Image (cartoon, rainbow, N blue to C red; front, side, top):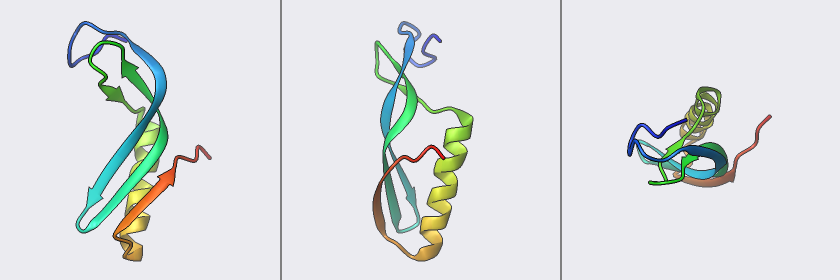
Length: 75
């Protein structure tokens, strides 16, 4: 797909590191599947993956963890 940010690059499958901040909690998830722009590097995460990331962030926030670094798990 053409990048909606720079309008020049095409996206290709790759992996990203996503950082989510909720109140006092920070979650870093590495190796998240994403489409990445070849020109500007903008990263696009598919809706199903974004929903999973948000669910993990919700669960982490409820436990009282302040910082967590995790690998992305597809299943």
